[in-house]
Amino acid sequence: MKEGLSRFSLPRIIHHGAASGVTGSCHRLEAFEDCHLLVDCGLFQGESARGDTLEQHRIDFDLSAVKALVVTHVHIDHVGRLPYLLAAGFRGPILCSVPSARLLPLVIEDALKVGFTRDRALIERFLETVSEQLVPLEYKTWHPVYEAGGRLVRVRLQRAGHILGSAYVEVDTRDKDSGYRDRSVFSGDLGAPYAPLLPAPKPPQRADTVVIESTYGGRRHEDRRTRRRRLREVLARSLQRGGTVLIPAFSIGRTQELLYELEGIIHDAASRGSRSGNARNNGDSPAFDWSRLQIIVDSPLAARFTEVYRELKPYWDAEANRRLRAGRHPLDFDALYTVDDHETHERTVEYLAAHPQPAVVLAASGMVAGGRIVNYMKAMLGGDRNSVLFVGYQAPGTPGQALQQLAGREGQGVAVQLDGERVPVHARIHTIGGYSAHADSGDLVNFIRRMRRWPGRIRLVHGDYSAQRGLQRRLLELAPPDTRVELAAEATSTETAD
Image (cartoon, rainbow, N blue to C red; front, side, top):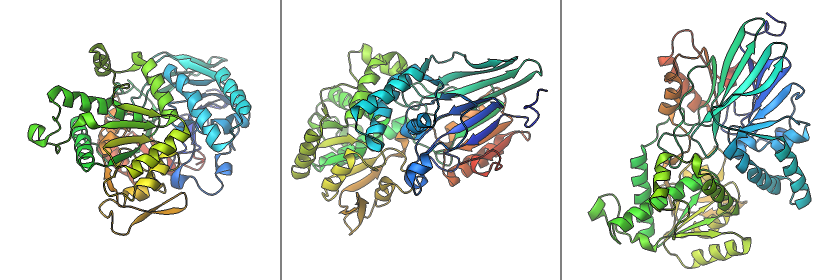
């Protein structure tokens, strides 16, 4: 065996984020001593963002052997450290799916404006650099990253079903002289089956090592029919009071899926009659005239993402394309209103706060950690006609989680801190966990067990401790004795740098 392979029987995997939390995903695969791959490079958020975030996000590991960055998807906790990576001198290719290549510049531009500079010339220069390094890859196609002296490292992207363009990564490593071969899989974030717009992920045929997320490793989601019914019910009860429903939503993925579901609810109501939301008709929601509903997307970034989603219809699933063929427009319908500029945003917040009316507002950030949703919250949490609906994971330490934990105590003197301000909470707080874009514990287990054979090593990342432990226990119950199931946070110190 060649020098460099004798040190470890499997490629070393070093974690520079998301080993013990749900943000900051960044994993380095040492395929050979002179060939490393970086999978994702994301920002830390919530409790994971400790102390001096500038120092925490700084790239402090050697990049000399890193041949490529592979991006699983473009959420900020997976790509937000890209400016730091380039500032540290990385000039290699940035590999991602074709849809992600369209979306990534939008995400990075927004991240630069929020965290670095609003100087347009600097932003354009940086985006030009990123564009030069971007290498869009088609799904299901092997792409060589490294070839030298009989050694080969190649990657292949497969659909992950999380957001448009999301992928899990297969890394194939071979040494012709020694006969050494390895297949490592990085899940990125896996989507739940039957999610709107996107086909469900299919597991790889085989892998020696799987690095898999565990965001919902200890929880199960409702099925799509149940969560859609619950969405309709929560909206109808809230809107019947004549108030507004505020939905903190990530600009990419969650916003588009919710628009798709809302279009379906409105369309079904129109098909059954002008008051088909009546509980006497369908048994699951109080009377509400859905034709009165206005849906407001207040996020320029979300609007731009939605436009790209519309342009990438070939990557939608079969159900979504059937709607298109029927003449429907799941992401562009009559009840939808988009707020672009900040002045219009301020007027919209002021008007809805002063004139309660049945409306749904979708605005970022998804964890209420900033963005336009905070202005709505500060202006409207005090109104008992209004509601807040959480449809995604709220990381520990975020304002979203603090607000979510007040459910059931609204109007009892409770408050939440937003922008350093104590905001009394009288609006009703709801959560529908089934609309998470993440696979649940059953889906994660099935991703492994439906492979042709169990991998020799499974490493759990991107989840809090209890979620990782829960998934580990379930996998150990099913895994053969020769499969190691380990938590990244408990991996040996030589393999973990989180």
